[in-house]
Length: 625
Image (cartoon, rainbow, N blue to C red; front, side, top):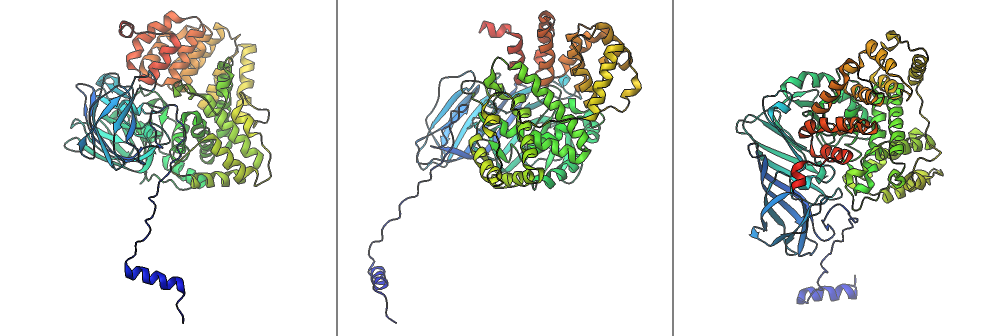
């Protein structure tokens, strides 16, 4: 067999050692989108793993230590991180000191931390400590906790507050894995959004690992006198001693929730789903930190009636944590999907009627938000433009409830089976990645609408103000019955307590929040005398009742003192904002400010900012500055 000429010359070339052409060095091109809320320029250089080595100092209320990052330089000579209210002491690049600078301070964004590197730099190490202005941290004295015996610390990173306790590239589209060594006082336990301990260590040193890549806002830490109680092999509860049994009983359906979620949209990939019950100053109902949801104690009602919040945070394990909004302008991609998923979990566990009551309350919340935003219609679009604004401005009912209504309308248009198959494929194909609104629309058109020859006004839903005409209509026979009972009472001013004996808290909330403006003080008193609403033990019912007491100038049953007690003991932003709005709406600002001066020290910075802006409150020390 003859050797082909080209093979002959190739063999001759190899034998003679002729020079081989050099392969071109591969240049990786990254395609991060423009980010209005981070100084990072990840297309030039980005972080992809964090080793955190810190100590928690309760006496001085600071965290100090080192943040060491593995980085990808992409031939850049600098890398930019976000920093706000941090004391940056030194920076190393591959073990050697390097130049760094902090840029001009922006009230919202903080400062860019620019670090000199070479194109070969693999690691940067930042020695730093937090300051008294650090917004993510809330340091609590023993008397501010449930047990009132030990201090407590927790972080809240969403949306852009992680940069206030760790110098980091604080953009949701930059994902990283992390490990952490955290030193705390020996009598306290530390837990993070990572693999967690189940018991206290003897020396107060804890090691954590998060092996799945997550955005910076999901890095979370809590330190307190905690203990753990398992519900199942992969679910359980952390809480202070006095809250533990209550929390365990309240959240005992967590394993059922995880199983229901998996049956809908695929495997739960984070291995563990635990909940930590935080002190009442926690500013949100819950925060979906992977492996460890942070939760407010206000959801513990004694009857599991408010645990849809746990279903919501669980749903984030797919929508938000697994597939994340690329920027905060796309926030609805996190929350609209999560509300939809939450409703499906609740329907699977408790039935369609129960889920539809939750959905109707969601719809009422949306109507209220549309009224609040009537003078700024662009704020009612799903796709936002928050450049120059705090991303918290977009964290309202539009993202949650309009987003949900959009997806539910889609489901009813294409059919549930088709929609479920689409969502399951969506989560699988985009796992551990980020999503822009535009990218989602393209995926929706290709994989659902065009594929099934369905016409849908997607652009109107996403890029136009308000709610399109083709919206899902949600009904509830139980709510219709509540409406009938309320109308009878308005006409006759008589009320039979027996009709409420089987009411869920959702029926109570629907009943109270729909009081007409013409409701009299005498009618308010009649209801309170019969139903004792002022002294309800359900925090959700308390909120809507106290709002109506302010709306109708009702002062019976010592309700004014109960409102003050509620506002000074609960820090959940939604609750306190609702009530302070009622004070303002009803020209009771003097009363509001008196209460706020007392309650403000108990609130997290997230809640403080909202209520400061709402009431126009300026603390004396800030005025002096």
